[in-house]
Length: 485
Length: 95
Image (cartoon, rainbow over all chains, first blue to last red; front, side, top):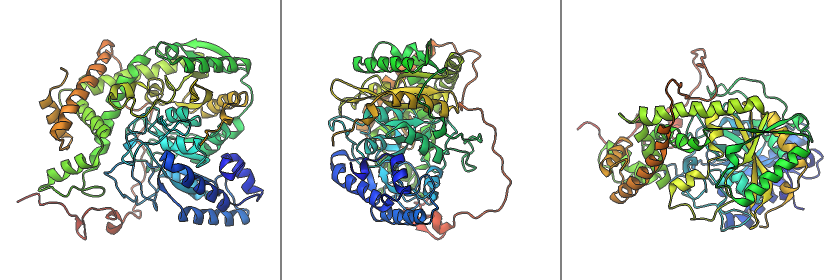
């Protein structure tokens, strides 16, 4: 057992008891990154010296008895979070060596507690992708099988936690970008309710869907990290001002009295047989823990992917208009006039998937097509959201698969964007409904790849969601398996 | 065909993307397939349905209009491709 093997809560205990220092834990993670990242490519930027300096400062806080829950904990941030002292690329050439003039709130809260930034992790460019193959810094490999993708867009966040390069990381989830890679890498990932965590300083993809969340090795760590970042932020007008409960206190080892809904649309055709078997086994486990299982229906599930790819791309086309080569980021060397400066900088700086989504979104918002595409999708979004509200009349938590298959192989889906989009069928509806959901390990495929269980909670019921996840996790051993890397 | 190559070229102009011919060809096929797929939404009757722009109900967040410290021009220009004491330098707009 090495220091890099420890979970966030084990690190907390060890630091508080002075069994080891933050500097030692940080060094162990940095050495682990150096040893394994050539195979994985999970990091875009590794913070060596600054991480050790931050760890030293955390050790002084610990010596003075001033430790907060995250003091001295080494963490990785998806490279979508603005960080004042470390470049932020969003895995795009168009941002290149951009250094943000301010910190994202979620990161600032961790920094204020004395957390240590190990580095900025890889992702699909502008968080657009389901495989982490759309990064200008190269694809990330799955720690369980380096011929497979880690999932996306927070592929680096999930891979670095699964490979024990970092005890935990933050990611973002717009259509499944935390849950799907967590599922594919065998770690825990939570997408909070829209508005639970500030989006300030998080580079925007689709503003009505984007949400920040933790990626960790177990459910307790997930509760601890969510605690540190949740809450109202005056700098994000969409962050919601409701009290943040004590998430760790909500964790209980049984499910007595919990009504778990099984959406029948999540168990239909097209579900991989190993995934189906693992999720059905999870249903049996929850029942044995005292949960009441009820069948529910989310009848508009089949429309969610189409709805999402109109709304998300429309919002993206607007959000990404700011990358014009004028104030920051890449500027073309060849332009003769201002329009060419914009158009050539953007063509040179954006990758193919980002261009595809900007084009689709621009079309959906353009004169003559707005009502047929964008407005229609917003109306369908109402129906999808209503599906969840109806299901939550009968159930406290919903249960199903995260993704229809385990991790697929690199290049397997890159030729057909639509097939790639359809891999998010079970995660996208949650973002459209705005509620919270998480992925946690529930088994392995015949090929040895992790399978994730999705639990979906009521809006702002993260405590109940974590309680359910914790009870399941305590009754199983899946989270204890380690990727052999 | 849901979308023609010339329509794709028009959208590229709106989106300020100087796409190459090869990119225009590929995107015409991709967008045609995706627009064909999203057409399924027309199978749903949405008459009388209120559109959702945000899933969580929200109201305008007002604050007092107070003078507060903000970025200096130098700070705001840290990442500028062509910084200039007067602003952000770009090619001449008016001949």
